[in-house]
Image 1: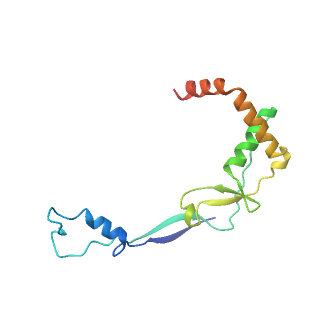
Image 2: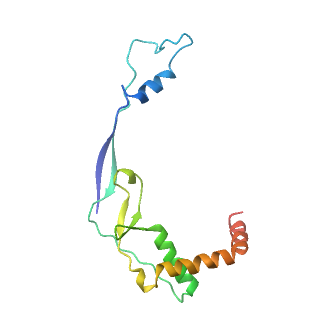
Image 3: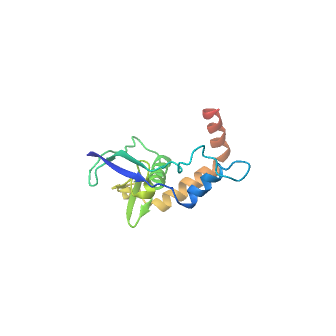
Length: 144
């Protein structure tokens, strides 16, 4: 279920980033002051990280006991926000490095048992707007 992978942070030596960093090393005369004739140090780094193996199946559940209509609407909206649909599948973020393909999984959640998600969202948002002041007061008490 779990494995390790590695990557390389690319070296910026010789790039515009490198030249920008070198500006900080200029002395008052505009000359590069490295203290030696050595080139700027390299910043390349190889790293490893633990990941969930592609294809691994994780299982969990969400349960409501004696739910009200408000509970159902809140749960539907929470799942819809946490795992939005992308190309017909719900995608749930699990960790970092999502911009390079890590940190997300496909969530198999059947929300049809709760009802129409768009309708539930409308009901929940109407509830939030109608009770705005009480909700903000409660949040202030809880976090204050």
